[in-house]
Image 1 (cartoon, rainbow, N blue to C red):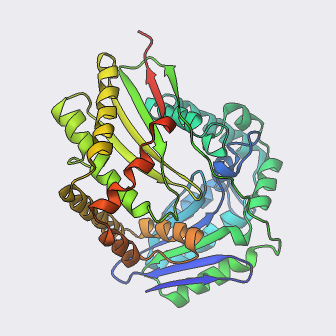
Image 2: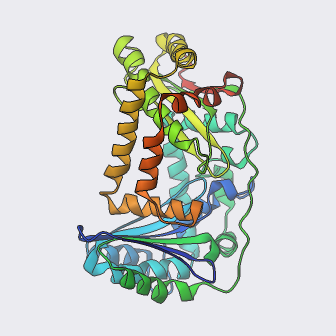
Image 3: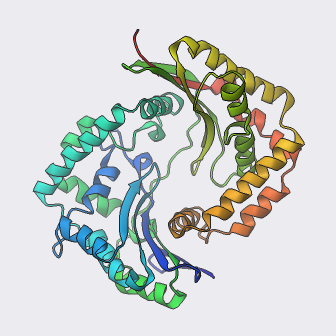
Amino acid sequence: MKYFHQYKNGLRLVHHYVPTVRSVAFGISVGTGSAYETEENNGISHFLEHMMFKGTKKRTAFEIVREFESVGAQTNAFTSKHMTCYYFVSLDENAEYCAEILSDMFFNASFPKEEVERERAVILEEISEADDEPEDIVFEQLASVYFAEHPLARPILGSRENVKKITADDLRAYRAETYSAGNVVISIVGNIKKEDATRLADKYFTPNFTGKKVAKKTLVPAPGRGGAKGSVKDIEQVHIAFAFPGVSQADPRRPAVLVLNSAFGSGMSSRLFQKIREKYGLAYTVYSYPTFYPNEGEFSVYTSTNKQNFEATKTAIIDEIKLLIEGGLTETEVECAKNQIKASFVFSQESTSALMRMHSKEAFLRNACFDLDMYLNEINKLDKDSVNAVIADIFDFDRMAVSHVMSEN
């Protein structure tokens, strides 16, 4: 049983009762992330996410995590381009206990000066860790080329320069600007009935929002553009990534893009895997994936190989794309991919935390609960022609961006 409710202050509540489990996943998501930041404060959404765990007037940072873990609950958070989510997964019997802690964190984070400085150092280490990962570097470069001056080009972690100068007052101001009721979704999934989920939302969250309503920033669509960028790092392999135009979250072509991706570059039977790895032996890892944003999308391809095979691998991927454009997918490939996508949707229903995130995204997108049957029906309606029709929309070589990371020698 699923339930969606929007309060007068704009706060949205999604509930999904799953009586076959003994857990509850409880998330509070805010519609902000690096895409809504400026060049000057890029990284502040992620910094704020860290600081929400660092103490309130009632609890220290250690007491927050100790109280969650004392009842076996798991708690965490993440920041993306468009959303910041704080959540816990607990035994059903401890849901209210954990909801009170999450509420205290969300509304009463105090940003002690010593914790701000300590977490600043932690985030700088996180940036350094990302800088040691060539796969992270190649995708950050790719975004900077493909999205150019658009906010989507900015890294979620922000720059070192910005992280070094963000203050507690900056964090408070940004929270006041973005963490308003109309920009928040509460998603509760698991062995908890509707009346109990509503009671927790009404007791610990709904009354704690101020009356201030903040208009969400409107992002202009990112056109996406071609180009190339490379960097040098002392590593064994060359890491290569391509970006092509995609479709938005609400685009009716989205199901077709999912099926196209599955057949082309997701899974061991996909064309990329079979050709680049199995036939030519050029790479261990090769895959593609679509990213769906509110106003636009991106279709990416990634692989890594040794330096001697750099050009051959790039050529092989481009040739495979050209072959796809010329001949399309076969009916057998489309049917196999459809089954893969449907299975993926169904399997995700077995995780309360995955369901919680899916419901949150759907509430932001459609003001509704995630509807598995609707998505399965959209996939079922697709045929070979409808999937092949999106190939030319995706693989536009005039708008192809390429990124690579390799050693100097």
